[in-house]
Length: 243
Image (cartoon, one colour):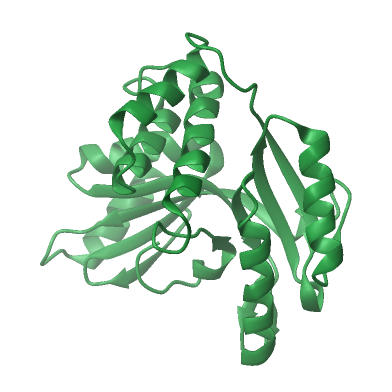
C-alpha cells in the first residue's frame, strides 16, 4: 500500500524483500490458481481477480513460466494440488482481533499448524465468527493520480463511480473504499477514466480498533511475522493500531 493511511494497519502483507523469494512465489502461485478456478476462467480479460494477481506477480518479478503454470493448474490442464481458501479467526497479544486468509491443499494440516503458532506465541485461535463482527468486508482500490490533479474534481468523480470513502495518501496517490461486490467494476471505471489502478482487492476493515503502546505494537508485529511466515498464509487483517 502506498504511503501512510488510516487503513494501513488493517492488512499485513510482506513484500518481496521481507521474505524468501521462493516463498513469495509459492503464495502467488496458489492465489493465481484460486483466481482461475473461482474468478471466472483463465482469461484475465474476463477475470479481474486473475488479472490483478498476474499484475502482482509481475510486480514481484515472478517468472512468466511460473505464472502460466499456476494458471494451467487452476484451469485443470495439468495436475496439481487441489487448493482451497480458508479463513481463520483469533486474537493476538493484547486481544487484537485477527482474520487470517490461507490457501491450502490440506485443511487438517493447516488447522493444526496455525493453532500451534497461536498457542505457542501468546494468541488464541477462535472459532468461525469469533472475530468477524469486528470487521466490515469492503473493496480497497489504490490509485495513482496525475500530477497537477484537482483533488475536489477527483473526489467528485470517484463518488459518481460508487466510492464510499477515500483518503489522499500524498499528492499523487489515493485509496478508495467501495462496496465489496463492486470492487473490480469500479476499478475498471477508474482505469477507463485515465487513472492508474495500482491495486484492487477485497479487505476486512476494522469497525473498532485497539490502540497499543509502541512496545506492545512491536510485540504484536513480531507475532504477525510469525503467523505470516507460514507457507499457507496469504493475508492477515487486524484491528491493532499504535497509540
